[in-house]
Length: 166
Ligand SMILES: [Zn+2]
Image (cartoon, rainbow, N blue to C red; front, side, top):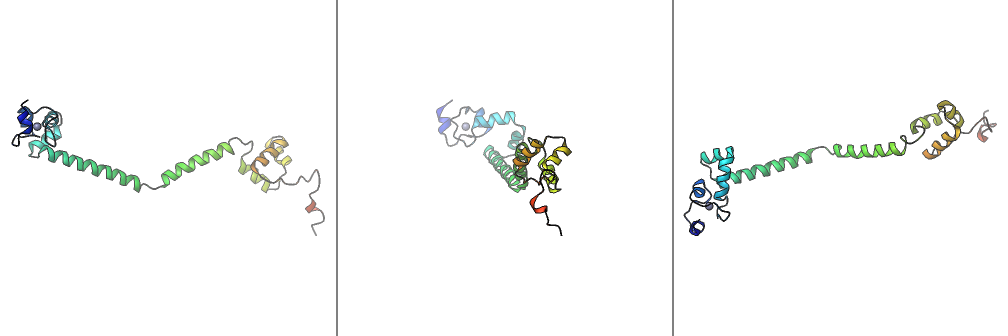
């Protein structure tokens, strides 16, 4: 290629004609090089249609960039607009899973079940009988859960129960 082509002020750079005229390197001074124009004109139907419609390659590329920017902004807006509940939900899902693994999943007795039985006034022994477990298993689960035991009436009377009912 003639070096004058690159420096010429009148050469139709950034056009199909420019590529066909011999500007086929990356040295093209046009915003969209002749080579790029040619490549896209040959391989990109939408690009060719717009060139044939009279748009310059620079205009087409600028439009494409604008559209890409708008698409990116729309995407970002959509992400921002998406309720945080999504992220919060996944966070809570993880926490629930952790609680499950730490609590009910590994515990012998589901904590809510243990809590209900304790609330009902059952002793460790009674809970064990009810659930088909050993008493010490119930005691262990209860201690892990941090729950107070109910006094075992059969072994020794609870201090508060003696003489309080009158
Ligand atoms: Zn050129």
